[in-house]
Amino acid sequence: MVRSNQVGDRVLNKSPKVLVLLSGGLDSMLAVKAMLEQDLDVEAAIFATPFCLCDKCAAESAVKKFGIKAHNIFMGKEYLDLVADPPHGYGSQMNPCLDCRILMLRKAKELAHKIGAECVVTGEVLDERPFSQTKQSMERIEKEAGMEGKILRPLSAKLLPETEAEKSGLVDREKLFSIRGRRRLPQMDLAKEWGINDYPCPSGGCLLTDPRFADRLREFLKHSECLRIDDISLLRTGRHFRVDGCKIVVGRNEEENNRLLSIARQKGRPYLQVIGYMGPISVLEDACPDKVVEKAAEITVRYSDAAKGVKVDVKHVVAEKVRILKAIAAIDQEIAPLRI
Ligand code: SF4
Image 1 (cartoon, rainbow, N blue to C red):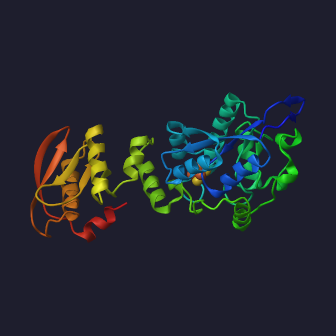
Image 2 (cartoon, helix red, strand yellow):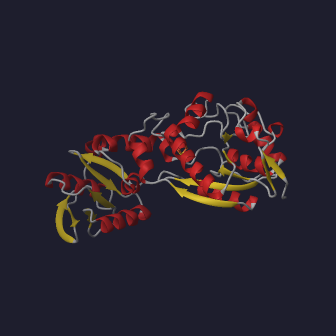
Image 3 (cartoon, rainbow, N blue to C red):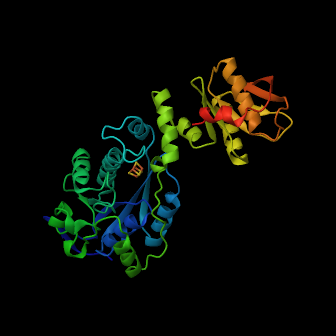
C-alpha cells in the first residue's frame, strides 16, 4: 500500500523505505512484519559470515514470503580480523557479538543511505542475549556504529528511548511492542497472530557460539597471528591434531575427504592417503618435520580400514610430488593427547 506520508518536514508521496536486518530467525521476521504493518516499504539486509550455519535459506524464504527486496552482504576479512582480536571481547564462546553488531550496523548505515532508506530496523529483543542485547550494550553498539537514536527495534521499542523514526512520525510507536527477555512466548504469539508459521528454531546460526568449534578456534589463534577464510574451511572440517606445533586435519567421511583433497590441491598443501585400504585424507601444514609427517601417517592409518599392527603404504603428496611412507596405525591412548 502506498501512503502519503509526512516524515519530519518532508511530505513523501510514496511509502517511506526502511532497511531491516534479516537473519531469517523469528525475531527479524517479526521486525519485517511490524514494518509492513505500518505500510512501510521494507528492504532487507542479509548478512553472512564465514561462520554462518544454516539461516541463509530461512532468510531467503522470509524474503519470498514477504515479497521484499533483499541485499546480501558478506563480511569477510574485516570480520575475521575482529574475530581474531575483538576490541569488545567475546561472548560465552568465541562470538565477538558487540563488534559484529557494530560492523553490521555500519554496513547497514551505508546501505540505507545508498537505497534511500529512512531508518535501520533490527529484530533485537531487550535482554534476550546477555552479551549484546542489554540496554547498555545496545547503546554502546549504536554509539560506535555512529547511529545513536537511529536504530529502531520494534519488538522492544516501548521499553527503549524513542528513536528518530518514532519522533518524526515515520513509525507509530503505539503499534510497536514491549517484549523483553529470553522467553520466546510473546514472539510466538505474535507470529501466530500474523500467520508466520514457518521459522527456524532459535538454536543460533553462528558457529562461533558452538563450544567445540570455539575450542578449536582458540587453539588455532594461539599458534597463528591472523585468521584467513581458508583457515575457516579447515577449522570446520575433520578431526584435528597438533604434533610438535604442526596441525594435522584428518577427514571423517567421504564428503570431508573430498573437501580436504580439494583444499590440498588448490592451496598446494601437503597431504597423506593410505594406499590399498579405504581411509581418510589428512592435510598437513607446509614444511612439517619428517618426525611429524611420520606421526601424521600413523594417525592417518589409524582412521583407515587397515588392520591394527599391519604396516601399510601411505602416500605423502607435496606439491604434486609423491613419496611412499610405511606406517602402522597409531594407538588411541597415544594420539588422544594430540587431539584438539
Ligand atoms: S552470534 Fe555470531 S553472527 Fe550473531 S552477533 Fe554474535 S558473532 Fe555476530
